[in-house]
Amino acid sequence: MESKHFTVSEVTKYIKNLLRNDDILNQIEVVGEISNFHHHRSGHMYFSLKDDDSKINAVMFKGNNFNLDFQPEDGQKVRAFGYIDLYVPRGEYQLYVESMIEEGEGDLYQKFLRLKEKLEKEGLFADEHKQPIPEFPKKIGLVTSAGGAAIRDIISVINRRDARVSILVASARVQGSESVGELIESLRYLDNRDDIDLIIISRGGGSLEDLWSFNNEILARGIVGASTPIISGVGHETDFTIADLAADLRAPTPSAAAELAVKDMVSIRNRFNNLNEQLYYKINKKIKDARKELDFILKNRIWRNPELIISDQRQEFDNISNDFSQAIESYFKDKYDEIGKLSLKLDGLSPLKILSRGYSITEKIDDDKSKVVSSIANLEKGDLIKTLLKNGQLLSKVKNIKEASND
Image (cartoon, rainbow, N blue to C red):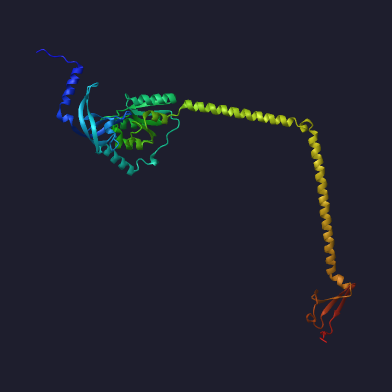
């Protein structure tokens, strides 16, 4: 039998007609978990629906998704209504979604949330476990796939920012059943070395299942327990993994991880040069201002005739000396007058002054001691007394005591 030959287009159109004429595929309801979701700027939504064993590409055009009552995202479990057709340019069949309702979050996402909650309760993600990132690492260890885009981006960024930094790559698969063990082994290898200042663990973007190796509990504990600071750069900006939460610092992308790890030495040098120029300018300005001030001082008449300084100071000294002498003289005169006044007062109160007016003072002599007698009650018959007069003393013995009468 002679075989009939078909062109690619003929085969594609034939399959397309088969799909269109199938009653089940023309009105179908598909339940699955969203992955690789992309909302195009045109308004169309492109994504995949998957279960544990298979995956089907899907598209929901702007006119159909405009009235969705939820925002589709990776990990959601949905019920999609539409038809299966062939996309001719690529020869691929896909689900054209006309309406969609939320069935619930997918199993993987639920596992992610449960593990996140468990480790959070343990305090594994607490700030106290975070190590500071070194400002100027000399050697960086990189855990990623040797054939992925992430390694090229990271090495390119590091070399551009500071070519002096060394990079040691510990290759590991970042997807698949063997990837978790390789990631943990590579991380331990780098952490046990003495020459590694910083570790970056990274991979490019992907769906939740593509990034699932980085949602492993053992890997998370290995990251937290490492003695070397670790930066994670897994997936795209909106992707979050358990490894991101466990790391000392999370970067939104692999390139961003490299930027956080290494200072931009070109910018630093430019900044240093700018500061150096500013310092040079300010020092020169200070010197110029000081020279102007010095020139002004040197033009002053005092510097032209220094003797003026001495003569002015000498005259000021004489004035101060005269003022001081006058002040001393005035001070002692005032004190002398004050002493004179006090002497007159003291003389008026002196007992000798009283005696000169004809009065006398009587003292009782007892055991060679004298005591002024102010009352007859102080004397007895036979007591020796001494009478003081203005020009001498009288010694007497008491023979009789007579009290003064009130008459």
